[in-house]
Length: 312
Image 1 (tube, helix red, strand yellow):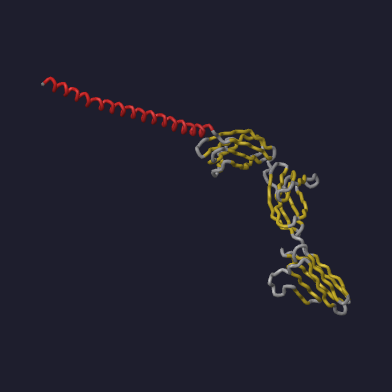
Image 2 (cartoon, helix red, strand yellow; image 1 turned 60 degrees about the horizontal axis):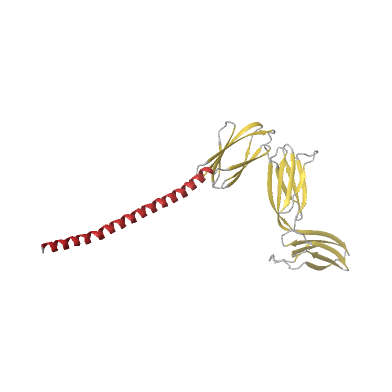
């Protein structure tokens, strides 16, 4: 009897130990899988950030330099924002130009006559620096840019006047985005270039570029409004004076002075245009000499004035 009881107790002990061993192995396996996943994820993140860091380190700003006499044009490009540009001539103190977060920067600096070493340092927003040096020879001490003056003569004509204290090379001008016209300085007048132009009808932009012999350049833009004045014709028609005013768009108003007396189509100054392209009026003439003055305005405020004497 005692032997039978003992055997049953032993079997029960084995049945309790089996499930415990399987549960422990499963937990260990799951933990190993989690650890392995964390390692793989960490490697991916490291590779990603490591690549970005490597790009930041290897990418540097590029620089192109163009010499125009005593002026040096710096053209800087970078795939990241530029923080500042520092330059110095020979061993002089540096001058700092702000990048203002731009990816493309163009700056002009002025050098002195003779052979000089230009040193340039460019720093981006990540602190990555590019250094450049170049020997530059400036043969002229002329650093003064040409002066451009645009004189409006009337509604249809303007005059360009370009001056330089030493000698001009050429002047380029063009309307809006049209083709350029180039004027080269003449030997008999090296310091002055003048040109008279017809103003295009309506509002237009005149672009002017002036360059002197030393390579100094000045650019100017001028807004010009081209307008056509009204045409006025006064003729004798029997015992009257016939006045005909025409305009290709619209006549604003007409003022007449007949033998010292003023008349107007807008006597109360309403500002309303006549709304016609042609206006005709006949004035009775008095015996003897008659003086007639007619001032016709267009809607832009420009006018044409004609005075005539008619004897009856």
